[in-house]
Image (cartoon, rainbow, N blue to C red; front, side):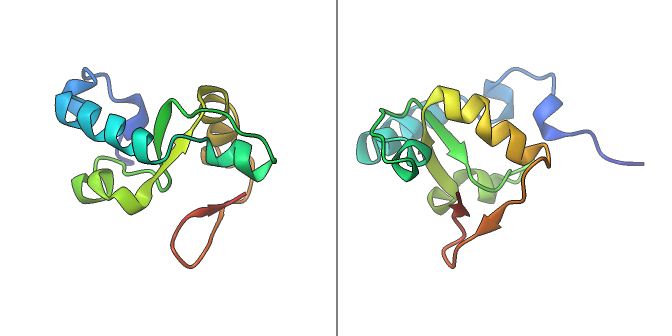
Length: 102
């Protein structure tokens, strides 16, 4: 039997690891990386509001807290393009550092 997806976990966000510690880490990351990486690839400069896990962590705390697995995205890119990729509608490739190639 397949394990339920982390994405559809019905627990509160804080119970899934997105509590005050995550909020502090998220703000620090956005301060250091303020621009959406997808917009930059398109030659645009938009402020990011979301810290995205490049490789889905699926509840793995080590991967969840790995800053090398984080990227800054604007909400539209996070909610549209990233969802398409994770939904398997687009092939995802990674560079030598493990970052998504767009």
